[in-house]
Length: 387
Image (cartoon, rainbow, N blue to C red; front, side, top):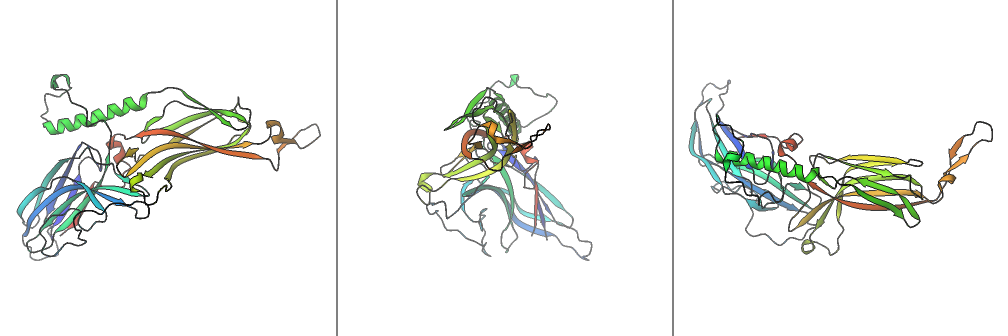
């Protein structure tokens, strides 16, 4: 028996273009109950990254994939196929890398190997939607002599920041901050600079603020104004907006604001022409606002959500969806005098005519620092298997 342990050193979330590093440890455990222990042999081990694409048959019409798919590993199969047995299509994969050949482990002995691979910048982000899914995995395959291949899969999340691959690092390294007392490999140095560059680009893109004012009106007149200071956000940020109903002619009784994503299938892949778009709500604020001059809301963008993106199959966009309930009468008739005595009590009317209308405001949502997103990731940094 051999235990295989794979550990992602920095966490399970990465930016496209970064280097994924995983330490894989093979151990021959020394059992306390056994009276005699023997050495264990592995013929080979290899590792490869791939992205698996899943589509709902009811919503997406995909062309048939090339190549035959096997659901199980044949007993005499010696070919390493990382996505063997998985549903969907493998749309992206890196070249396989051999970790070792002919490894012998004595009882209690362990051997560790480091796997490094740059994540492709032209792939889609990790996404689990209502119509499609993009799932990234690192698959480690190993085989005993005359035994079937065993696969250890390590799922992880990929964030895509557009424009990052087009950036050219300066040739003059003297201007870059460095520590002369530390020796750093060039690949790791570039990877570190890539993460710092992404953080800087995201900070610049999401820190720009300018006043955006919108008039809220229906067919009968003005209800109020809405103010928001920016429309570009990172996942993990809060979307903050304010309302001013003091200058409105039509009383607003209630409003709600929903943070939503819009998942639409490209026309050539739609199962039915003109099929509806799928919406997912991530946060919602609802408030009764009769006789309220000003109000505000704050909606958090979950760190686990997917930033907006577009592929040849699907498009994901973010928006704020507003719903307003307004009175069909003037503000003075929304209250009635309940007593003619010196102490006057005002109560709400039992019935009143209302109008409802909605409005959508598109916003842009970008990725965030992958280390920050790792704290709320559903994936584990450590995975293991026994063969």
